[in-house]
Image 1 (spheres, rainbow, N blue to C red):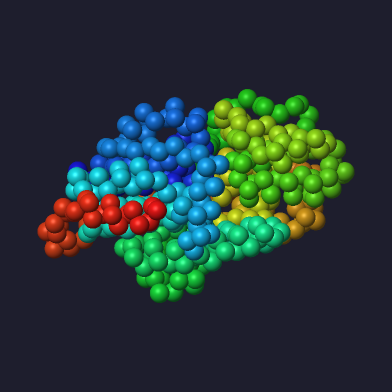
Image 2 (tube, rainbow, N blue to C red):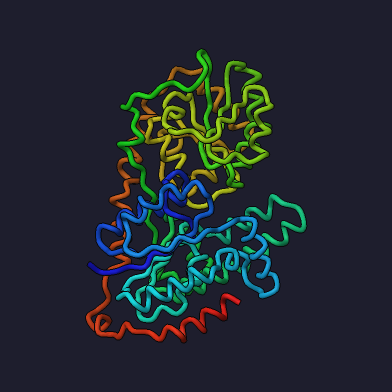
Length: 423
């Protein structure tokens, strides 16, 4: 079995948020074809309980603790070095030493990097084929953040966007292939970096449609005689925090004024302080972390996705569609998702549009045709099996001459080179 190095910025388990869903399914797929050596960070102490499960899918592993407060302080070095702050945030000497050791001692022919921040660890990887899954265009996400903040954070975010885009372009040029989470994301990057367009591709996220199935039986978590609207997502993620705040304060009061029995439920782990404060608003409930989100989808009247900042594919939308739930989403939440508005879900462009569409849907007879069509769309276009076939193609072996190359490297030279980046 060939050996592969897989570097991920966050432990790929449990698959309970967007990036971890994708990185876990990648690991699970790769482990069927390669002996996978995994290097990753742990930024949540609770994730330590899953180490044995992740190790069972791997050969050698390296788990490094990442403490967000310390990492943010470390990232400030980027202001002095002219680097994007993302790089020192995810820079660690012990992980670099482990990567160097694996490249020295193992016959690594393929390297898969998950997210741009991890590419810095394989600048000196010898002849191995290097593929990066950018997932999203992170530089564009920082620009979106900049438009929502005041100085000095707006300046810092614009700086990060500019420098990170330069780094993303360099990675794509140096690596053998680059993937994104959707066709629209890949197309945008080709416009931003036309010199590497030929290397850029995409593969969609998938949904476990057997798990997210409306045919299963779920207990009702909501109060009786209510019409719950639900938003599901990691509630320490700024884009989600912004989304529920905007909906709860600027859209939901209009809905509740006409339909007093409607409630808005916010479901997701690690709710930020701004999110917890929303529970003081009439009709708003912050459920926080729950053992299973499916009951909240199954018994909701509607699922809402009012994101104003978004990149890539929103798994929360696909999972709701798989459950045959009618979704009302913003255009930003729909980026990268191929679905027919009005037939498989609804798209609302502004505050009044959101309120009007939701009120109309709640006052109408339930339309099971739309929910069924939504699930069919997921089954046809968003299976992991279909998406991961593209990964196999990216990692296909090079010509025979490649196999003859010497895989031995001078570890001391590589440590010295890496040390320049880690200073």
